[in-house]
Length: 118
Image (tube, rainbow, N blue to C red; front, top):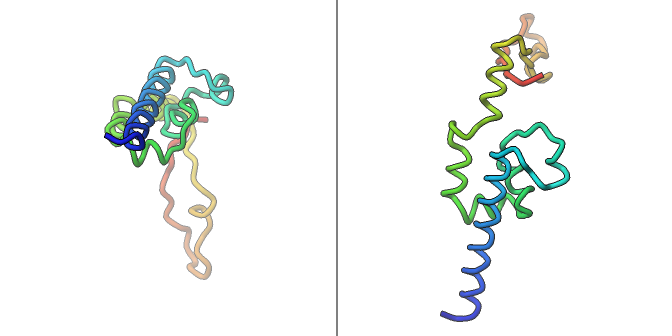
């Protein structure tokens, strides 16, 4: 194995370790990145990468198994919290581009609800 290949393998392993550790810290509710410490605790791909100190591209291109793990519904705490918020009196938000009636249509547009935590 050449030195260049060995360095790539080490870098890949180090990135995966950083991403997995970041994922575990976020799942435990104990982020260390200053932008995440006082945040809402939402588990997202962006938050994992920010916590790990790497780009989202590194996760998307180099670690699809971890990406699938993060995307599993059982790990989507943010989605669960939004659903609970809506069922317990949260609001339904409609983007402005859906709320505007089409020009010359003479009727109101059909809108799709977006359930967001208040």
